[in-house]
Length: 288
Length: 253
Ligand SMILES: Nc1ncnc2c1ncn2[C@@H]1O[C@H](COP(=O)(O)OP(=O)(O)OP(=O)(O)O)[C@@H](O)[C@H]1O
Ligand SMILES: [Mg+2]
Image (cartoon, chains in turn orange, brown):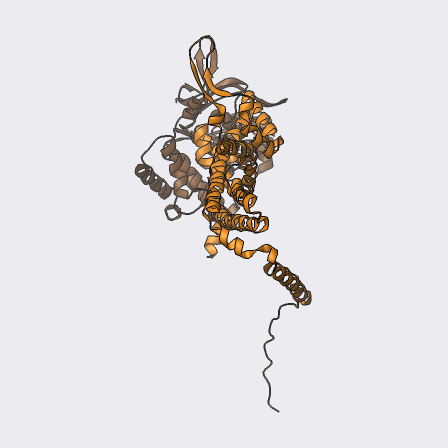
């Protein structure tokens, strides 16, 4: 008998019997569901295909994206201002900020949208006019507040209340030693905020803001209630004429999912950028 | 000798806690003044009153003859705007126990930030100055590193370069080596030792008695919010006059 070299033992991963079972079970259920959808004549997939890239739908989609970006931009700027007001030592600014957050966070978004849309019922004309003089620069509210303007006002002002809370948490999350260091170098409050505090707060602000963008994207569908011209408005317009409700909702869902997915990628990229210089990122890039 | 800093009847309380009690102190120009004392005696608070990171309850502080934080209005003192106070701070440097480097900026960006933002210096000029200062603290090669990639000793040396970039007349050190591992203390003290030869006025709160003895021109001992004793460091360390100084020194030796 030949003498055998003792073989080096191979290192085997632990066995996961139940994982395989679970995978099979989930696959079976999923396959059955997909098959029943795909083969379901009520889904009318040909209608989905016809409308997915139709001009009307794409116009609505463009409006949804514009509304999302525009409203988030306004909400972020306003949110930063309100957060700074809430944190300033000035009691008037503090209470204005608190009242804003209390009101715009407390009233449901749909109620706010309908309110802005019907502002003319409250003030038929708005602008500047001085009593006892000829000065009268006013304009008909219905001309000024179109359904698009009402949509922007409703979505942005509501969102600003949430952004203010996110920004405030971000500002509070920056170590107080940072503002002391900046102050000791002679920086003004504005420079300190812009150059030192906000860039660091961004690391804390960006992830929840990404979630807000995605919520906003979906919340824009509420403006269909006031004919805001978004994707949902377009879909409703189509199915109110042809009654193909299910396939058109699928069209809307496909587009919402695509845009949400893109937004998620953007969020991931932004989180990496604002994390620059912070240990987890630094060690990651050193390892790479 | 002319005083760079004159502290007169300075009082500071946090709530009911009277942390600084009628402090009077002159700090000579171009000298190294070391401040020692037990924890909680008010050393940091006094330093932070000088550059007005804390607002005193009463008393006055002048730096290079200029009243800090106030202007005279008849017989009274009117508090300055935050903008004017920022301008006054720009003339004093401060080095913190916990370094407080800006983590989102590289070493070079840390050093040029205030010269560009506050002094409105041209970027090329600021960078040239910064590289010279980084050379002075021995960190030229780390210019493009982020603070999180540095050791504590390196971070503190960057913090010193950052303070020097504003060309201050006066630099305040609040326990610059207390957060460091023992083997890193030496490199920071060495940088401070060299700085002392350049003629800048230094106020150093420290627990490093040997630094105070070798480099200090004057030693100040604080306890319970009061200045108990001041003197020439070697003399005072060898022959403290006050009982509390004796007791403190015997405990730390
Ligand atoms: N912002 C603050 N609010 C309330 N109390 C404070 C504040 N800053 C300092 N104190 C208190 O004031 C006292 C003096 O603090 P200070 O930091 O000046 O002492 P210190 O001499 O620097 O001590 P250490 O050697 O521990 O740094 C301490 O009792 C401290 O708790
Ligand atoms: Mg202290």
